[in-house]
Amino acid sequence: MTQPTLEKFLDDVKHHEITVYQNNGVYRHLTFEKPGGCYHSFNITTFPHHLVITGNMGALIFFHSHYDLFDFFRNEDLKITPDDWAKQIESTSYEVKINSYSEFDIDKTKKLARKYLDDYLKNIALSHDEKSNLLAEFNRKILCAEDEWKIVDAIRSFELDNFDFEYFCWEDCRTHRYDYIWLCYAIVWGIKKFDELNQDGKNHDRT
Image 1 (tube, helix red, strand yellow):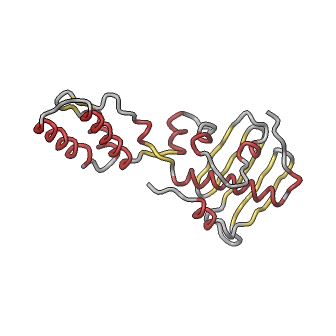
Image 2 (tube, rainbow, N blue to C red; image 1 turned 90 degrees about the vertical axis):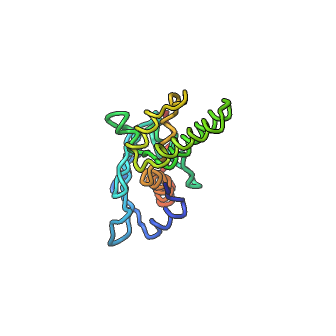
Image 3 (cartoon, rainbow, N blue to C red; image 1 turned 120 degrees about the vertical axis):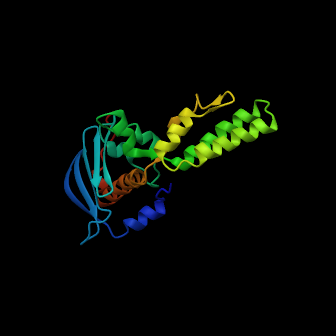
């Protein structure tokens, strides 16, 4: 699955302008959009220990011990750390939270399943026929699966000649959502634009 690069994001927002509706210490309300258009527009709102980003690419709420989350996210080089930031997302449940930043990747799952099988074959002596049968069954049931439900069911139910996927790691089968990575870039870029507009308005860490 593809994800936006920094270059792609910068192209999306190259005509965006910032509008400051509120700038009162840690209390901010900023909008970034192209004049006359709403595509790829987004809003950043902050208050103590929170940053909220909304727009037509989605919405996320972050919570952290930092008093001002601009200090937490700020990066002059526009570098992002999606895995660390995902831990700070606020949501109603774990399932909703994980789905807000990641999605099941069937291609990645197939590669991981094949690696799991290859590791097994390296550590056990099988006859040529046994190995061929195992690979054929793997290809038929798992590699040919066309959607998440089918491949999950195929992996969980797979059993042949004492081989199964009992210890298969499902957490590794997810990848960051396109819109989540885009919003991560939007946060660091938005903060940088705000700092350029208001060089004297930076708040300092009050953790």
